[in-house]
Image 1 (cartoon, helix red, strand yellow):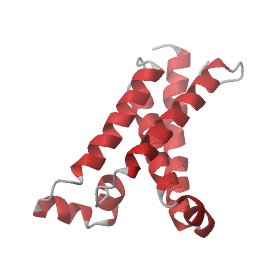
Image 2 (cartoon, rainbow, N blue to C red; image 1 turned 45 degrees about the horizontal axis):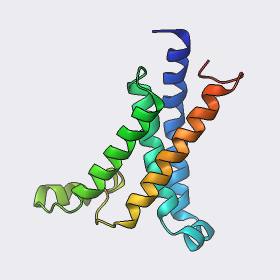
Image 3 (cartoon, rainbow, N blue to C red; image 1 turned 30 degrees about the vertical axis):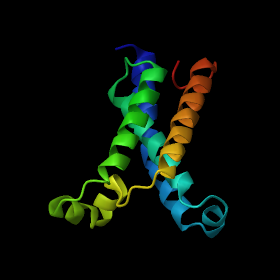
Length: 135
């Protein structure tokens, strides 16, 4: 693994806790919620997923990372249409709710797409910067 690949993996992984905090704060912020609803948190969920995929799959292209992050986000959203007692009990826990959600909401899919696009754009900008942690 090259030094730049190793740095990219570490940087992507290091961003995950900050993105989680930002997503949780976006749900608690009255002005964010009043202006955008819960959708910034949904977009950040996909950004977090993008960072995890980038950290775990360092050889993947940015397009592949964005596509996988979007696929995971969509899969989790569509899984909310499934109703099984054991799955609902997992979703009833704080962690289960944060990871799996609870109720299918089609507009969430647009928020996930915005998150994937934003992460892809930020990754592309960082990759082209001379002072990039990716280099």
